Length: 84
Image 1 (tube, one colour):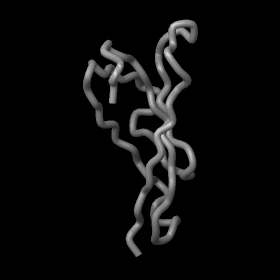
Image 2 (spheres, rainbow, N blue to C red):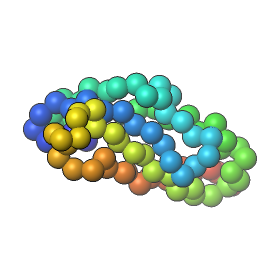
Image 3 (cartoon, rainbow, N blue to C red):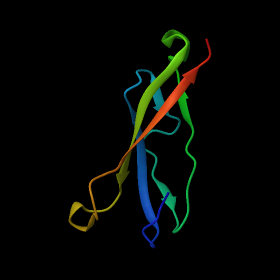
Image 4 (spheres, helix red, strand yellow):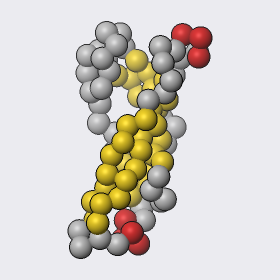
């Protein structure tokens, strides 16, 4: 969610769950303020994980010069559930 009050440009990556990728890796996304934006991810290795809850993290990279960035790139924690 963009709560900055100004439009933001960013891209996302996935960490912590091998074989999981953002459907359009490296693609920049425009998010108006205040607004949220959905991004599809593809858990390619889901069947090999086995049943249960698996942790992953989304790294949101701001597409602005570091001198203008308001904070470090956020990391959003999440989970992927594989039925048993």
